[in-house]
Length: 152
Ligand code: RB5
Image (cartoon, rainbow, N blue to C red; front, side):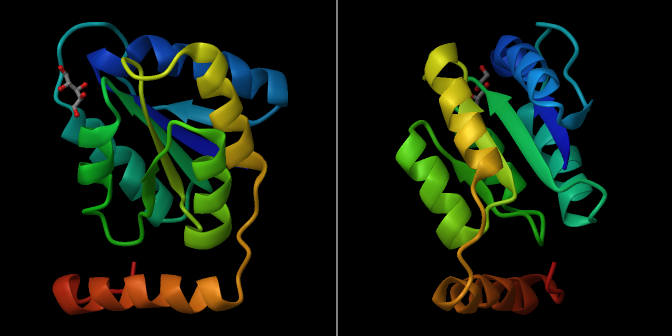
């Protein structure tokens, strides 16, 4: 599995921690920034990570900002990205099983690192359940077809 990582200044420290967790798990990643606490604009990082995942070069993406909300709004504008804002383990598991989410969004100002690690690890290891959920994910692609003229 290859994971694309991104954060703004509000998510910088949690992104750095996630890199350590991925290394412990033996999961390959690429860090698309930000590389410091200097103020930046979260849509720039949401866009690059979502595009990398949607293009197929990465299996998953993880985006962190202060709340995770801006990242999730922006990432979901990229066709093929299914970004899920999760601050609990139940949602992390459910979004993988039901939505086949390929981008996880977290808010550093919302969740502690211990809980975030459980969310990240659950999200990474949980598979898509398929079946009726595949029909629903296909309908999400159908919405992209209507508005973007492509299926992601
Ligand atoms: C930055 O101050 C903050 O707005 C950003 O990290 C994020 O929370 C936006 O949704």
